[in-house]
Length: 80
Image (cartoon, rainbow, N blue to C red):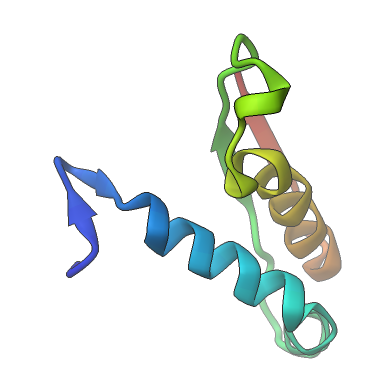
C-alpha cells in the first residue's frame, strides 16, 4: 500500500478516507445494503487519549465502522 508509514497508515490517508465516508455516507450505505455481503469491522481504540486532542478519525472512526457494518447486517467490535 502506498500510504503505509512504519507498518501503519498515514494520518492524512486515514483522514481522507474518513472525510470521504462522511461526505458520501448515503451512497455507501445504499451500496452496502444492496450488495449481498456482510461487513464486519474491528476497531482498536485508545480510551486514555484526551478528547480535545483526538484526530477526526479517532473521533468519528468507530461510529462510522459501526454504521457501515450495521447497514450490511454485520457487526462492529471495538477493542480498547
